[in-house]
Amino acid sequence: MNELTQSNDTYFLGHPKGLVTLFLTEMWERMSFYGMRGLLVLFMTREVIDGGLDLDPVTAMAIYGVYGASVYFLCVPGGWVADKIFGAQKTVLYGALIITLGHYVLAIPHEKTFFLGLVLVSIGTGLLKPNISTIVGQLYKPGDLRIDSGYTIFYMSINIGSMLGYLVCGYLGEKIGWHWGFGAAGVGMTFGVIQYILTKNSLGDAGLLPTLEAGEDSSSYFSIFSIGAIIFALLVFSAFLGVWTIDPQFLNQLIVYLILFVAIFYFVYLYLFADLNKAERGNISMLLLLFIGSVLFWAGFDQGGSSLNLFAKDYTDLFIFGWEMPATFLQVANPLMVVIFAPFFAAFWINLGKRNLDLDTPQKFAIGCFLMAIGFFIMIFGVEVALENEKAGVKWLLLTYLFHTLGELCLSPVGLSATAKYSPKRYKGQMMGIWFLSSSLAAGLAGLLASQSFESGISSMPTLFNQIILALVAVGVILLIANKFVKASADLDDSPN
Ligand code: PHE
Image 1 (cartoon, rainbow, N blue to C red):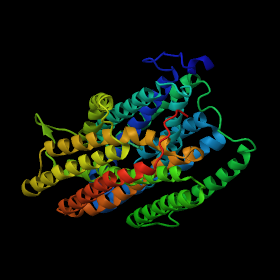
Image 2 (cartoon, rainbow, N blue to C red):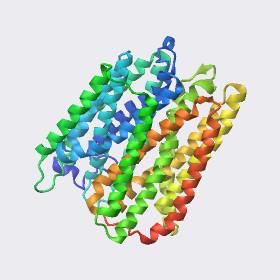
Image 3 (cartoon, protein in one colour):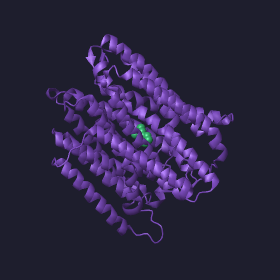
Image 4 (spheres, rainbow, N blue to C red):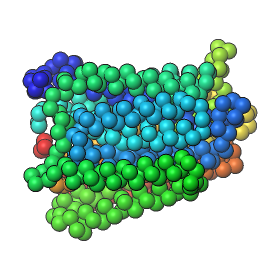
């Protein structure tokens, strides 16, 4: 089986056969993840008579924030579990099974099963998402130049999957019944699991074993993991039985502070106690800059699934040719535009490179922040139209998503590789965790912002969006200025490793 993962394997678009397995698994996982996520705030805010939970938008946005933050926060222990105990291949399988179960639990129309389903999907995604991304890299031998295009193809699977999810789950959920949408996510994920089990062999030994160092032993890690899992299960179970309840907005704030604390602690540790030399410290400053840019960017971006999604449902004229389309269909704009524009962006960066006009990563992040700000600037006009005429045209959201997507293409593809390049050698694995931690903090922050954007209906939106714009522009400018100083002290190690 091993030969399949050697560099001469060109089975799929010139790439190893294992990439098909990972492509399809990630596609179905993202189909279920985004399909369900697109329905989440809509379902929570509909009245009981319409099959919803009748929550006020502020609470719904906070729950969405807690969910998003948990999903990406759990990627950190998810990576650890694969590294130390099960290996990435098995961890992906366990994650996929838990996600599938989660979606089927969500399909049961009951308030309690709703929260249990969300917990299961978060845990499963934490186990699957970081590890499937790692296996992609391990399909290639060190130094194989196809690795970047392998990741580009993988990024396509993410976006094709999410398009499928928004269309299928969105249609079923909004037009037939919410739980049909959640069930469809479960069916999609079932395809993903079956496919993964049947074709897992083609991964060869990529991610097959834990990456333990000499003298380390999986069984002691397994004990730590079991204790953690039991405490977690008890907490969830007691909440399920109603032993304790917690205000979602408070929990949202708590989670944001907690993640912020972890991030600050980690960066301070790296600066002061990790025994790094001057150049490595410079690299850490660079990563800190990117971390801040990434948090702010994704916090804005995440409004797409929450506040902007609710704006689509309740304040946008969704009729085309006399048919009212599901609000989730507008979410297709982002993944569709990623698939269309990604090749142009790749060619553009190469072209700049040829002319020696290469942009530094923080400069690309700054452009991403500015594009995101333009998106919100356009949205302010959309909100004003809705405030005057009850409903706004779809063009406002579509234009906003266009700029958000252009921003994503500047920032997202380079973020991961920059993390790999600038991380001190001994800390590479953990620094990947930091990249997911930035998404997690962003999702938590997004929940707080989205709650605020509905404090007094959509009339709160323009003020909040203005603040988001100011913050994005400020961070963009800081990134540009700090880049000059940090670049001087950083030492970019480009050698493949
Ligand atoms: N569309 C990307 C994905 O689903 C968004 C993302 C970026 C998620 C970075 C996590 C981390 O994978």
